[in-house]
Image (cartoon, rainbow, N blue to C red):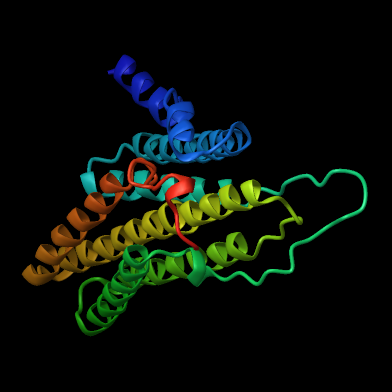
Length: 253
């Protein structure tokens, strides 16, 4: 048991032996690859630490519900990713330069991620209405449903920060890799983990409601939403790096 926990912790805490291989495939030159390696390592380390913290909280609380483990694990991964994207690059000494190009979240958010966030928001809204109209869940269910909506709101705020984060006037090669990193961060790094977390919160709200009044529909809905959250997390476990096109094959963002 102890060795198993240590093994999982090492995997989650950012042991990324394949980062250089992924960067070599995506980048067109050594500078681009170096930027990608740093981003991959930083993001996976932060995700891993967040996931380990979530699982540790579950064990510390002596939890026995698989749903709670999923919630804390997904929550830790999502929070870790957000914190990784809140870093500030130290500006070099000397005259400051800045790109005047206008950027927005829409430029970097892919269609699948956008639809996932909208669907999660719709689910959270429906769950909020259901918990208000059904007795049994009480304030606890409303808190979980509110957390589902709040988590998406936080994701949107962080996405905007990533999209409009200042960047200096740089050459074309660095511009391309910077756009790739922002796209991966906004879509696979923030939108999809945030969607999974929101669904996990919604499922928890449904579980509380079902436990309070025995509403069969809520219990079934909770299971379906838990599964959806787990599937989204599993498909995004590699941050979309396996399917991302190399910089030379990308069109305009």
